[in-house]
Length: 506
Ligand SMILES: Cc1cc2nc3c(=O)[nH]c(=O)nc-3n(C[C@H](O)[C@H](O)[C@H](O)COP(=O)(O)OP(=O)(O)OC[C@H]3O[C@@H](n4cnc5c(N)ncnc54)[C@H](O)[C@@H]3O)c2cc1C
Ligand SMILES: NC(=O)C1=CN([C@@H]2O[C@H](COP(=O)(O)OP(=O)(O)OC[C@H]3O[C@@H](n4cnc5c(N)ncnc54)[C@H](OP(=O)(O)O)[C@@H]3O)[C@@H](O)[C@H]2O)C=CC1
Ligand SMILES: CC(C)=CCC[C@@H](C)[C@H]1CC[C@H]2C3=C(CC[C@]12C)[C@@]1(C)CC[C@H](O)C[C@@H]1CC3
Image: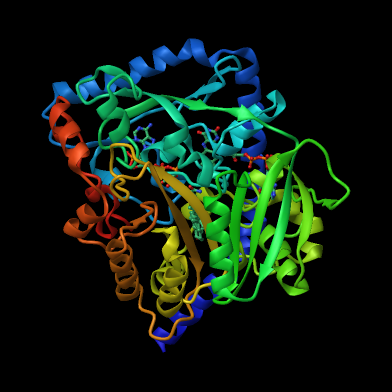
């Protein structure tokens, strides 16, 4: 009887989570967004952030020196609360490590002559695209969820539909400013402290604290002209997807969504300044617009190609409002037109608030029957990988995004002798339908597949690899050397594995 009551209560909490989300989280999210937009606009216009930056860096140094003068018995991490971060899990080490406050939230300088932007690590993608758009500029790679931060994307990784040309987020970063474990401030770039520069991406804050980043910017146009190509055969889709990604002069944006194992839509896009006569304007950012992945699915059902013009910033953040397709599990009627017209302007709830208020019953359910994974695979293995993922997970839609890795020193190794290698990010987010799915066993099968095929796993998600497997996936030679050479580094920071493995995340 007690078990039945508990199960019934859990059912209620999961099924009716939307009540709390709509009544409490949506208004709180909107208020927070409004406040941060006004605050960031005023600070940027007053140009006050650059003057304060040095003092803020000194404050980081002060905290590290304080730790150095103590018994150094704890490791260090940023004090950003774990509920604010863009991963599904909570990092348990935050409770025991010494937390270093890195209150660095501003865009510092846009340099139109050198085509760069300098910003602090807590600047978000939404904030940056909003700052750059009126100046006619954009980042070459804009990871699509508004709340992703520059610091997280440098220390983890960032991928978007322009990555087949520009590479990952780290490849458009030109310079990092870090506070190291001995309290010193260093700058690094490919010409200055190059080893550190190449070891920082994917290091998850285990080499030092990032305090600013110089990122490349490119000229932006007003719209993205997207050509949608529906496919009903995986081989044909995979072949065309690879050809388009590998072309010497490819389209600027390449992306595909799979809706079943054998059907999906390929999207090829380019920036343009005007809406042409060959397609309609589709402002997907207006408050009542349908969720983007639902709009794309319609092209599959219509079975013909189509062209649309999407305002650039709407395009960049096209998966934000529905958090890819994750929000449909929380607000199942979120794409209904009545809901959109009434509440669309409040969407989405902040990921941070969803994490903060996530009931235990939801965590249990996600642990048991939910996959959130991005696997990075050499592009020629796309078809084979989809077949494998289908057998293990059977989760749809699947996000496909091509990206290039350059032959640089660091944790990512590519085919020897090549200048660069094309990969594809296979993003699997949702409820698995595969027979026999079991979270740990199935994810471990997929991880082995990835390692055997010289691929990688994005580390914001759960990794069930052992330390040895993890070291097989990521080359640690440069990383180990840099850690050994930096004063106090090993005392101050654990290895990457110790911050990302499933056992240190709840
Ligand atoms: C706990 C917490 C901590 C935070 N810390 C910081 C911080 O330290 N520094 C900081 O600067 N900010 C911080 N933020 C703010 C957060 O990053 C902002 O909510 C975000 O920057 C808002 O930008 P936006 O692009 O969503 O806004 P807008 O551009 O106004 O967009 C509003 C919403 O409309 C939707 N939308 C926009 N374009 C499209 C489109 N094309 N298609 C579909 N939907 C679209 C999106 O859902 C978007 O969220 C924090 C927020 C929280 C909750
Ligand atoms: N399209 C895409 O590319 C997407 C990417 N992601 C992933 O999400 C993550 C980014 O999320 P976000 O919430 O922004 O970042 P997080 O706060 O999750 O940070 C990720 C890691 O970076 C470290 N870090 C962050 N800032 C600093 C800093 N100033 N100095 C030193 N270390 C730092 C954190 O260290 P600490 O633990 O000490 O806080 C943490 O280990 C990345 O891992 C990214 O790959 C997720 C969705 C989409
Ligand atoms: C494009 C790439 C590389 C990754 C996209 C990842 C996202 C789909 C996930 C990143 C953070 C995730 C969270 C959730 C869903 C999936 C993500 C947005 C939740 C909203 C799911 C519901 C929980 O209660 C809270 C989660 C927070 C993190």
